[in-house]
Length: 301
Image 1: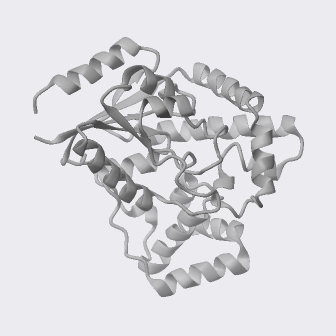
Image 2 (image 1 turned 90 degrees about the vertical axis):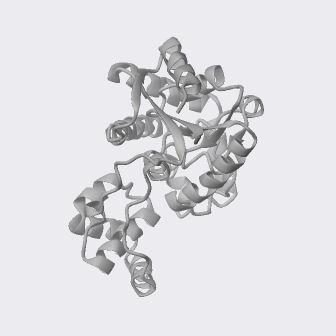
């Protein structure tokens, strides 16, 4: 009999943290699937769970890196697999939750079988990056693989470089490599996807951004800057942080964060809809979500 695993995902501000606290406080351990919450000191704009929640429910892959360190989906999956084994060995159930969609996809469905890295090509791409800059490299990606460019943040140097590497190595676009549509079979998996009306989600995003500022986001940014943070640090290219390096007045920064978050939530929903095994539930329907979880936990395989 396979061990059980639950994946809970939804767009930014959909209410994942509240749900985990209400429904998964006993017998579960959380594996963070948010590419920003892995960083130490990035607490407010990442909506990192507070210490009270993390004491109540064990969390993994939170606060594991310095903001200047690189992190990618491959590293995430390796670390997540290790945590999943440890959690099930303790008799608990892994709860995979967060908002980074391609982390979910790779962990649950596997990575696309792209060509292995060619060191000469990688060196060439790094040389181009150093000589011409990330904006040029992103523009080049837009020319050779527009589909991948649309999916990759223009500040995500690692993923831009990898997409260019794949093209230069194989002559094929990264977007042409298809990921398996078959869910992994070594775990018995329940995937819950949270949905909200678009108008309601927009209101929640705006309220969340205002709460970020009232909770001390500006002070958090100043502390990071005092450590030497700038846009060369991977973590600083995240929404809610990069705007402080691109704009001067707080009103503009707030507006830009809201716009970027709304766009990100839209991309998340588009991505999540490709998960054919997901059960879509209203984020406020605690009763139905609870019944779905209970039914999954009680069923025999």
